[in-house]
Length: 164
Image (cartoon, rainbow, N blue to C red; front, top):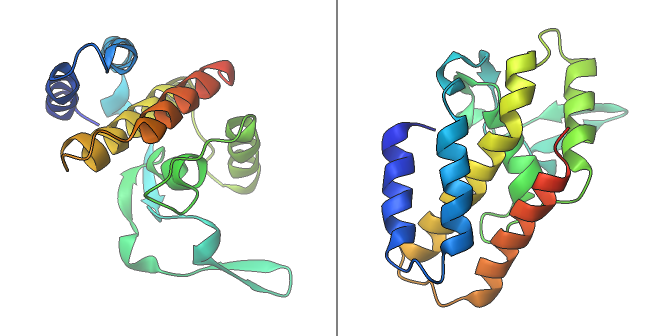
């Protein structure tokens, strides 16, 4: 999540301004709102935390697939379970899941998300949706998939409704 990647995504979307007008306007909002991103809380994150990387032993979840664990911005932990549902090909955002997962994370973590993290999480997630759309479709020259485009737009609008 940095200026050069946002500019790169902007240029990719600009190639078909008419088709990507909504996504361009969303990216412009993200660019305007990103000024605090480099001072977000950092910590150890799994990076691919989703249901397929949890094994249940009695009532206790055990996290597996640990090769992606790193010291990073805490918000990275929310991208996979909230947006991707463990499936990089299909974006999934379920209405209301943002609040549920944040509440669960904060109640079970010794270092809950800061106020600044909470303020920037929706912006970060919107950026992640756009980034994945651009990388998966435009840069792979597979941008004729209207369903994927519409899903990205729907997810962005649903996420907007979930803002606190």
